[in-house]
Amino acid sequence: MKNIAFGQYYPARSPLHTMDARMKVVLSVLYIVAAFLCKSAPAYAALLASAVVLLLLSRIPPRIVLRSLRPLFFIMIFTALLNLFFSGGTTVLFSFWRITVYVEGVYSAVFMLVRIVVLIFGTSIFLTYTTTPIELTDAIESLLSPLRILKLPVHEFAMMMSIALRFIPTLMEETSKIMNAQKARGVDFSSGGLIKRAKALVPILIPLIVSSFRRADELAMAMECRCYRGGKGRTKMTVPKLSVLDFVALAFMVAFGGTLLYLNGFRFGL
Image 1 (cartoon, one colour):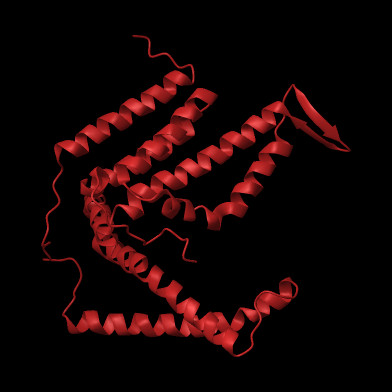
Image 2 (cartoon, one colour; image 1 turned 180 degrees about the horizontal axis):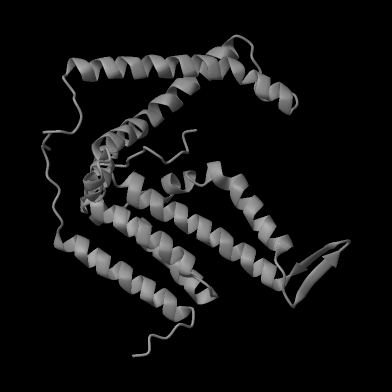
């Protein structure tokens, strides 16, 4: 559970840490779109190179970012196998019983793995490791502020997201403590079949749910004692401002998307 990247912030001095959180949200969306624009091997190579550049710019140790891949390792392998065995093609690599693997299927599996890794790297670096949860929720609130015309509770939505991100590390720590306490009482979580392991999780889930409701009640009482009444009339101690670096990063991202389209064989007709 320590490998989960959501809610974890890595303090460092880097250009990505100094950027405006609103621009980082926009860049994350554009980066996800760029990842799905890739259709050729050169485009995927450029996408993988961009992930390395982001890692270097963030000045985050690679081992910390690589840890975020561990919880999704099974999903990555399962997705790659689906693309490997169920993708059609014209060139047969080998055939066994009713299973036929094509060269195009191998390419599809490799490209899908690269896409998943790059998406995890990009979103983790932009949204979690270089942006604090408070900055992230303030950015989302600012970007969604036009929806207030439709009478939508934008501030309350951002507040709920901020609280959820804030308590993810707390809940993980609480889960670890409960597991250690249950292990000390003789509970075995690693042996037996699937049903037995599922039953062994009951002594963890019940105390965790009770503890979560208790924390939520204490937090609501604390906010009420501090006269919290929503976003009406509230001001911010730090007002975010876009800098030249933010617009330069946006220009580079747009140029990167155009480069991927060019590598896919798209011509702009200039």
